[in-house]
Image (cartoon, rainbow, N blue to C red; front, side, top):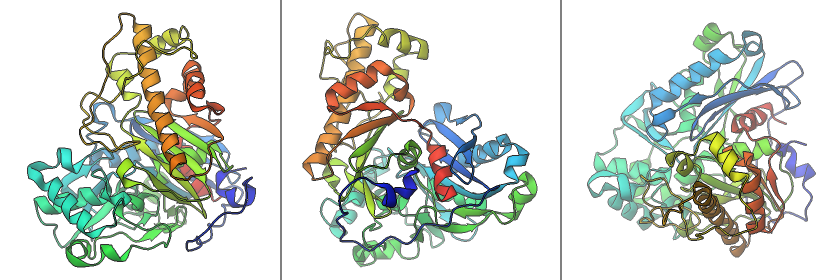
Amino acid sequence: MLLLGVLSSVRAGPVRMSTVPAPPRAVPIQPGELALGFDFGTSGARCALVDYAGQLVCSPPPFPWGERERLQTAADWTAALHALLDSVPVEQRQRVARIAVSGTSGSVLLCDSASGEASSRGCRMYDFSVTQQAPDGTGDRAMAMLKAAAPDGHTACSPTSALAKVLAWHCEDSLLPNEVIVHQADFVAAQLCGGPPVGSDWNNALKLGFDVSTLEYPPWMSSGALGEVLKGRLPQVVRPGAVLGQIDSALVERYGLPSSCQVLGGTTDSIAAFIASGTTSIGEAVTSLGSTLAIKLLSTVPVSDGARGIYSHRLGDLWLVGGASNAGCAVLREHGFSVDELSRLSATIDPATPPLHTHYYPLPAATVGERFPIADESKVSVLDPVPTERMDFLHCILHGIARVEAEGYAALAELGASELSRVLTCGGGAENPQWTELRQHMLGVPTSRAPETDAALGAAILACGR
C-alpha cells in the first residue's frame, strides 16, 4: 500500500482535526503511462520512473554536486535536470504523463516574474543562516522585521527559513519590482514548464510562512512593513501532486516527452523519502541519514516549536512532524572514512556498548549553528578528544549522530506528537547494520532500513497519484 493512500489504510484511531480539509488528490495515471520524479537533494540530483501501480521502472545514475554541495546555483540545477532527462531511455520518456520534483527544504532564490531567470543574488541553501552568513548585519535586521510580524515560535522565525533568507536579501538591497520568491523545487518545475515561475507546494512553502492548517498565507504576512516587502512576490501554493502546468514544448521536441505531460506540485526531499518508504501507520517514522539528519513522524496532530526547529508538514489530513539537524554523515566524509573502511570498522563495533566518549556532536567543520533538536546559532562541532583507534573514533561519531536523532524524537514526544512505534531509515546511513542496531538501543523501538530509500522514487510516487 502506497503512502498516498494513507487515509484509507492507516491503523490508528480517529484523526483529530481543527483544520481546513485537504483538497482531493489527483486521479492516478493510467496503465501504460509513467510518472517521473526528480529529487534535488543534499548530495546530488536523481530521478526515477514508476508505472501506474507505483512500481519502479527506471532509476538512472545520480548527478552528484561534488564540492558544490553547499554552493549550488540555479545553473547547476538546470544542468542536472537536462543530464537526468538525457539519462532516461527514449521509449520511457515517451510515456511520461506526469512529473514532480522534490528539493531541499528552505533552499530559495529570487527569479524574474516574467522570464523565470534567476536573480544575480544567487541561491541560499537549506542550511544558510541569515544571522551567521548574511553580510553586514542584514540577517539581524531581517530577523527583527520577521519577529515583529510573526507569532512567537513560528517556523518561519528560524534564521534558516526561506522567509528569513528573502528578508535578508531585501535588507541588503531592496527587492526589485520584478523579483519573486522561488524554492529549489519550484525553480526546477518552472524549467520543466519553460517559462516564469508556476507556483509552489505546501510542503516547500511551510518555511516561507504558508499556513498548512488553513491552506493560505496568514494575515501577518500581508500587513505592515513585511506585507509591503512580500506583496506580489509569494508563490501560488497547491497541494503536493496537484497540477502546476504543462511541459514545455521545447522539452517535448528535445526529449520526446508527450505534449500532454503535466508538471505537478512537488515536495521536500525528506518528505519524498518518507513517501518512498511506504510508511502508513500512525507512530511510524523515517530518519534520513544523509549528509544531514532529518526525522519525520506520522502523527494525528501537528506540533511546532520554532525555538527547537520543530514543525509539522501536512500529508493530506495527517501530519509529518519533525525537523532537520545540521549533524549527519558529511562528518564521516570530512574525516576520511571510505565506504570500505566504514563497513570494516563498523563490523567490529558492539552496538550495545557505549563508545569511549558519549558527548560528541558531529557537525561539519565549516558549520556554526544548529537547527534541530535545539536551535543554537553558536553551536559548533564537538569531535574531541580523538581516540587513538579509528574504530573507536567511528563509534563515537556514530553514537553522537544517533544521540541527536534520539533527542529529536524525544522533543516531538514532549510536544504531544503521536507515540513513536517504529523507525525506518533512508540515506547512506541506512546501509550500516551495526549503526542501525546501535540506534535501536537508543530509540527503544524497532529500527530498520526502509524497503525503499530514494527520494526521487518518492517524488515519482507522488506524481503517479497512488
